[in-house]
Image (tube, rainbow, N blue to C red):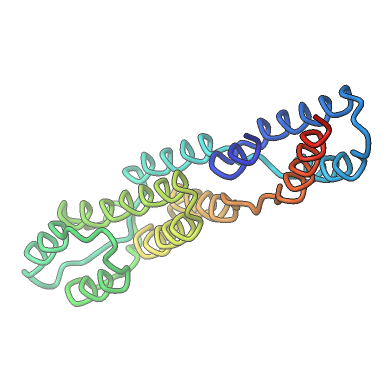
Length: 219
């Protein structure tokens, strides 16, 4: 049960409680020749207590908060120089592939827009289709990070967050304090190891099975 809790559910506290119960039961039983087993359990407990319980719910909520902030981030100015804007934006918005590379989107947009920082925030020009496309992509990346968290897929989790940061670097105005805050939050979240390596229970289980066999022979 402790192995299942640890391996499948990443529930460190429940695993510790179960192993402590095993050790207490062995001690109270008065069984002989159990020192190697108890030493193994003691080492296992020490390793488990040294592990940091991942607050998946807290991380999920932090990512959700960033998704909400996307709508408030001040965006870098875009100056339209082609009447192809609406057609290309519509084509990208309707794509069914949420994993379209950031470089692909940037390359297409670069053929339509001149990217530059405007001197006055009131001079920002951003059409509805363009804003929708960029922010939709950010929402998808944050959602992918949440899915990676839930499935304990660290690669998907980290890569989705880093791609979101890359897009924010291109989109957020340089003087946007909120944009910079979101990027700092992304760095903090990406640094969290959501799938830490758990200690192995095989040695303790092997010794437990040997004890069970000895007790069976005594009967």
